[in-house]
Length: 126
Image (cartoon, rainbow, N blue to C red):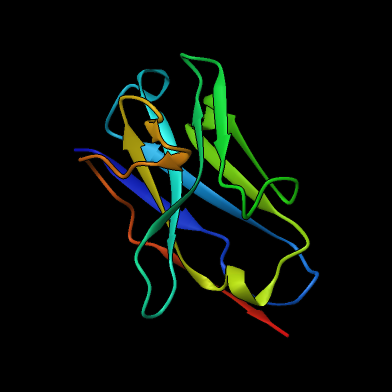
């Protein structure tokens, strides 16, 4: 059974940092890309970042480029999202997802179909 467990969310002041973790199990970690998505209240879910170890590629939404860094620890089957210089508009529930690849269309990371974690809340106060 595919399982994705996010952790690391919390309340932080603007300009602060958080590191989110996505622990994966139930599938061959190296065969899948892991994407981070977020959903703010009243808004649609949006793609934030994605890493594909097989393709050797990463993706960042324009809104987080230069502030967020995605990485993976294959020994721990875990993907991290290091978030710095956080802004109030980064407030959202953050989800990770396992997909065959990072699918980017017109500069936007697509959700695709597959497993999701339960999400972790990130709140950035001004």
